[in-house]
Length: 269
Image 1 (cartoon, rainbow, N blue to C red):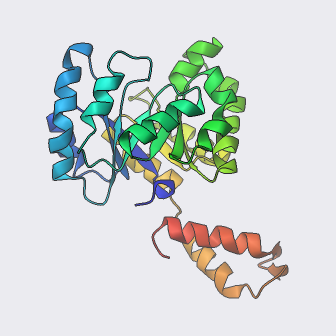
Image 2 (image 1 turned 180 degrees about the vertical axis):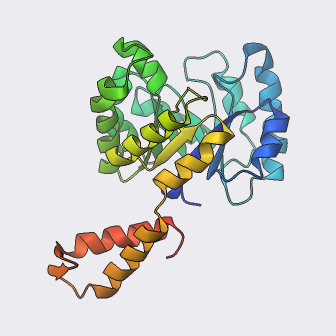
Image 3 (image 1 turned 90 degrees about the vertical axis):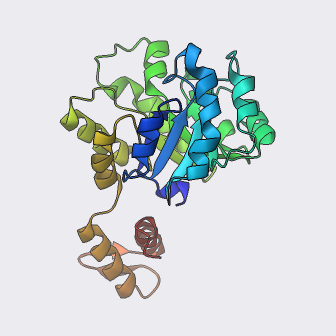
């Protein structure tokens, strides 16, 4: 699967063998084995040691990735070293604030990098970070960003709107994928669905998730419906080139391109 077609990207502790095995049967589009926040310091070495075996078993047609610790973390160098020979598709770097950080990790691992934007400086530099050749996409890190912006944890996301849009703009300028941050309230499925709908409206490609119960909703909301796919096929079939009237509205090449992108996202072309 191509990254920009991913709808649900599941974080799992790299130390949790049972959860990793279960993930092989889940319908998420990407599995991210976490060496950072989800793993306690006294289990970091264990988590690093589990990577090779986890990826040798593979995750089927899902994207397989590893999140390392941030560049200023004491565990960073050991995380990077542990990636040697690990068959992960990509590596995720948290708390990126400068393009050079992502570029250095790409050179060190030879793997595509997803940069997590989690601070005001990261937001300001999002376009430069996304422009790095080795960067394949951006993740929003809304929890840390809330903290830095002094936004209450129980507040809605309105205070993050400008930051999210700036990260999306940076990603799109570079032609890269971009994904919404995690939703922490696991007992609030309606809140999760509402945040997914908002994120889709903003222009995110998909949603990072932290529990298997969030996968189906993320897939449904960020993926096209059967009705939308049928409409896309009909529009493509009807288009003859240039601006023209179709179903009571004006369409042009841009709308045909959007319809083709939707079909590609569903694996039809």
